[in-house]
Amino acid sequence: MINVQQFRELIVRLPLKECDVWSQAAENLLIGTALTESLLSYLSQYPEGPARGVFQMEGNTYYDVVKYLRRKEALSASILKACHYVDFPQEPEVMISNLKFAALMCRAFYWRFEEPLPDANDVIGLAHYHKLYYNTIYGKADPSEFVRLYRRYAGCPTT
Image 1 (cartoon, helix red, strand yellow):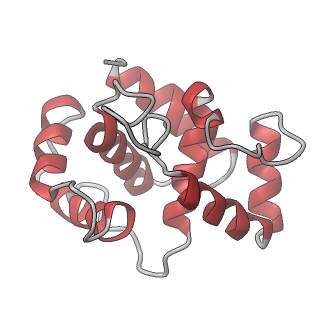
Image 2: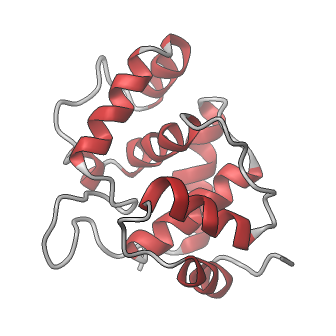
């Protein structure tokens, strides 16, 4: 497992701040998403499947996020600049090896929704937000697992 504090500081917080899309709620949501989706251990969906990177983003979702970003010129430019890319990689497999890019793509995924993020310390709210938007009703994630993993590995918000 990747050290959660280093992951938080180096892979999530710094790139999100660099692209001006950081908030404590967004940071906590991405930490919980990575813990729930991969336990910060799996780079490809296990035992088999289409999801890639520690955030376990599927290819179709990746392409949807890229399409969204192409309509958001400033956000798109800041992500590409932060990752030293001229354009978005054609294949989602890049999220296996480029954790910074994967974190920014996960943040861009959540950025698409009008519903505001829950309070940064509302881990239960963050868990339900993850389930509703990222994992959806069709996914296997359970909000109680998000809460358990977040509290065990990332801290224990009061709610």
